[in-house]
Image (cartoon, rainbow, N blue to C red; front, side):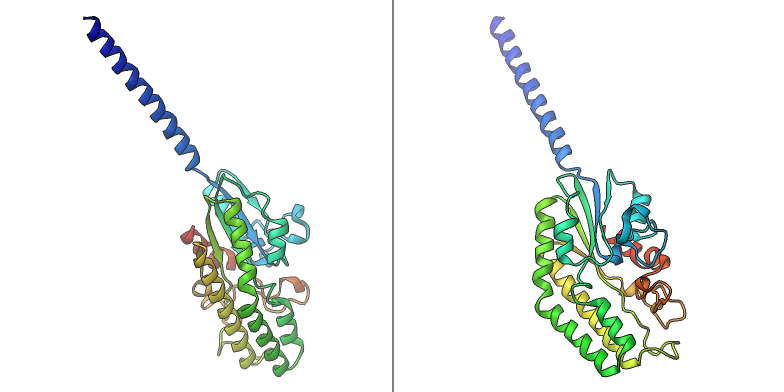
Length: 269
């Protein structure tokens, strides 16, 4: 009788211990497996320059409530939302000033970067103000940079993101082509210049996509969603030269973020 009671007691104790350990392990696993914070990094194409409705607290970074990160966060209510993307940012700026919110609780990261490293603003200024040959030479200089130097800079950013937020799903967003070839524009750049600029955007996207894939990140290609909405399309989601607010030139409008970037990011996220 005593042996039976002892056996029953030991058995009950073992079951209780196992249940307690299993419960604790499950709770810990649930806690560790549920990083749901969202951090939006990157340059002006992520901060929302060109979309208007800027957060006054973001200063020269010009973070917009109509930018795709803010739109996604409003629709999906992540556990936390940190928006550090900034106008003019290069890869070094992301490394030095944007990664602070990343951590073990970060489940999602978005990023667009590389255009400023390649000299995006200077390319467009050169092409608008100077000759066709000067424009194409400047585009070719940017292409050489994208091929030779940018990949290593992207690797540094991607490595840093993985180190600080190892559980995060990272979505790298690309850039749209600027021009519809054979479109409605009757003045401005030549078709040769427009083709060269579009081709450079394609190179930037393929280079970025390759580096993202090699780091296990997703790449969001927005060229398809912007197709039919380029400059010279008659229904542009990109600003052309804006002489009253030059910084918005060649950036997505609010419609470009909601109709061009947001669906791609939502699908990849």
